[in-house]
Image (cartoon, rainbow, N blue to C red; front, side, top):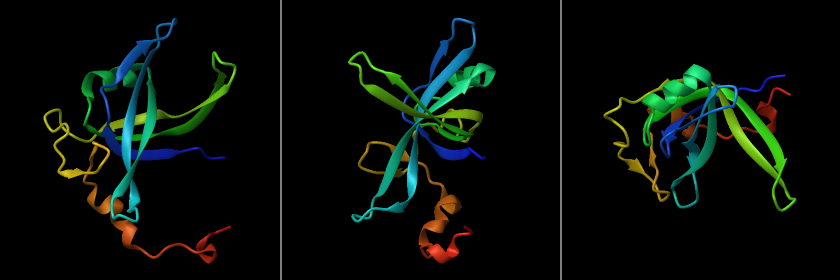
Length: 144
């Protein structure tokens, strides 16, 4: 089994650092990641993905990342559930980061010139998004 996710995007807010009762640091932030295609109006849509980073790496994220900074996250997808105060089952989807790379300088922040209607400044990822002009996959292309 494999559960691996790699994301590149910009932080939508400053990271939040908390500590567990046992003293373990846990940092959380939301990463805005552009989809690799455009919608019918020609605009890119964006996914907002919750990220959780533990221990020393979480402390580093809280110290060096900020809203608008470009970051790469390598981790695993986690879906957990809990019962809300109203008795309804709630689900939370988040990425538990194993590795976070800071891809923009402190001064760069939210200086990207690409923007969309979400108010989020999208990263200029160049070659990373170059696959958008390739032919669509068919069922014959799949290895299974």
